[in-house]
Length: 433
Image 1 (cartoon, one colour):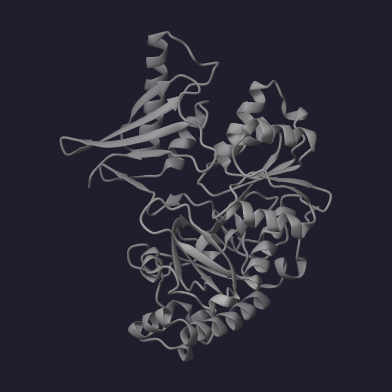
Image 2 (image 1 turned 60 degrees about the horizontal axis):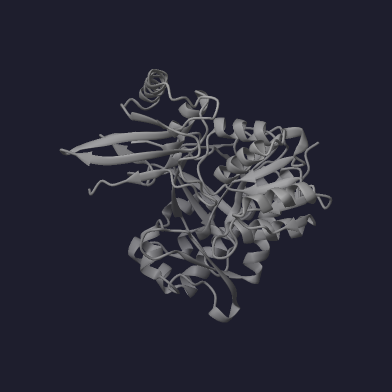
């Protein structure tokens, strides 16, 4: 039977959700226009005033906000509340330029933790669960968000943070942890380590896992479920909008319900900015309708996905977003072809490889070079050169068929690609474009 943290909201009739969204949007636009000079200027430049926004049907009239705006307004330019009312910051793990710093009032923290609590209950969590949070703590939103959500549900919360894998496994075993929260690549690594220790899925107390913060494929999900003997749930979020819990998967595992009482989602054409009809694949845009300290209106996430309003067997009425196929910015363009790391992962797992791989892109004589380095599993590992060449050929053919572009495949010995305890470093791009 499906459980809900806030059934009256999660299963509310559509018209009720849309009425609430309209009311909150109108109030939020007025609030930011009056309190955030950066937004006021953006709206004025765009020729729109709060009076033009009567409900969600007018959302498309507002200007977009992008990562560039966040950099320009850094650190305090987008603050929606006086600093003395802000109680916390979180920040992205961005590697380029200025980090994104997001601010929270106590009200914002409470709403965020409620969203994470909904995700934990959807994954089978209750006040009888032991929830091990192995996302990084600190500026990264993963640890603090799920930690707070776990407290709200009443789980025994084990705040291990990431890393120290053997200690993680000790706590899972000794405390009989039932829910694991971490990145999918770290879950795969924990599973691999447990297998090496001789643990079978039925000796692992875990029942479910909540995995997010990086793109992962359906094949990787099946892999993790098999190794750990759990049900693996996806969770979605970004620091700009609070963190994990913007959307989460239910027992149907067929897309993530967006918490529509807090966030309005749109899908746009990334090139023209035009809002696309329902069911189309495009770039996901979010408006946070009740965030106080760091209000985001029509924020371009760069994530590529689609939305579905099909009735969900779980009983939740909130729109579902598909698993992002990648990002319009971490999408690689190699020899003019769009390549998403998740497509490569699908081919690898279908052919029996683990999800330990690296994509190496370079440039020689004005042409892109494209290599995929893949770890062999211990069962496959051999020093028979002919056999390795056969495997490489088969994998190269699979990649060509999936991507429409040739990749050089290098099979390497097990354990030779560096493991990540946070977000996996999948791509090494040395092109100077």
